[in-house]
Image 1 (spheres, rainbow over the protein chains, first blue to last red):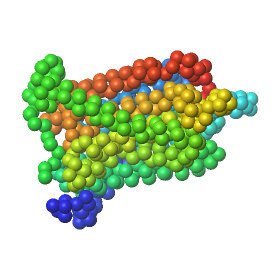
Image 2: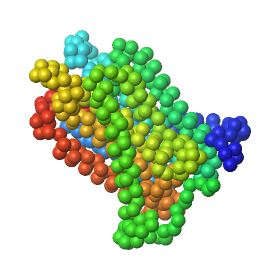
Image 3: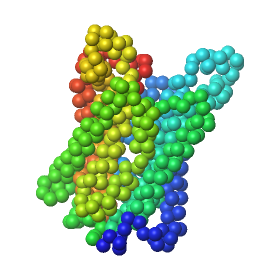
Image 4: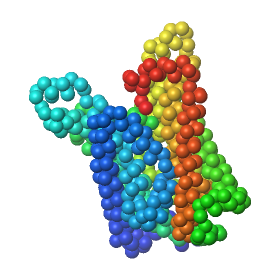
Length: 221
Length: 247
């Protein structure tokens, strides 16, 4: 039987190449949408935490608590209200990025040296310009490494969004499992692993370009 | 060979969450909640045991010797990047063709690989971050290599090591339900069956069970961590916490 159903059948690759490309694009699209929305929401939350300091522990604990909800549960819980739609996938995916992104933004702002901020103030920069021209650029390396973790995690979770009928490459995996036909499973799994590693590598390059002076390791278990 | 099993017995569509959870038959017997819980906890325990034994001693010794910093960091990053669901799925046909069946090797391997990086990183960071003065003092009073590690570095690093283990454990218990979509069962089976049967009660009830278990495990581990760290070390860390102890 091994030849009827090998791990990879090349004729399938050729036949289905349009579907495979479409799955990769859908996967990327969902990943980009998730991280973009996540960053927007995280920036808002971090802004709130910086402006009203007493809210900071609540925001940190809240986003951390969201992260401990099992992915299968969070995807499934939304099905009764939003069905098997894009939102059902997007809401949990965005929720999972928040813990990483909010703490990256806050850590990034925290590590801007006081003397630099004081110098900017002494030079007469308005508070708005101090944020835009000094604090954000200096916080950028930490924020980028947060984006890296969020993006890579999202690629993996998008695969799982297939259980609610979304998520490009994950659908190939589930399809392969349901039919016990291994080629789509192998294609979906290998491509999502490759996609995650490629994006991870891309972020490493971006980090080096944007902050060559600080190849900072996010030492955080 | 057939594909992934679907639900055996369909639950009535109009059953309420209350009825399902209060019916003794939902809890015991074939496919009941209790046996599924045992399934899940068994896999969780096995994964945590193997991953801890692999990651913590290795990282502690390497950090003690000051070796493998770069390769370790690189492996941790790669390990964190690889999607667990995809990896487990990829292992399914390999396991089947080798005659080991759907379960438990693919999911066990994928979860163990997922558990390693946080523990390794936590242990490595913790041991190499131990105050040099304490290590030097230990050497000055005559402790040698391994005794320094066992009697000074490990106790001082314990709290952060346990944080790493806890982060791993929370991830593993939260990810374990994917097993139900990979030809296995465990507590995630009700979500899968609910989605398959379009039964909202099962979906919501199953998701709640999985989420409650993950929450309880997280709380239990936080309590265990408090219990295991010696009070003196804890006080020491409360003092140093404002400095540079990683979260």
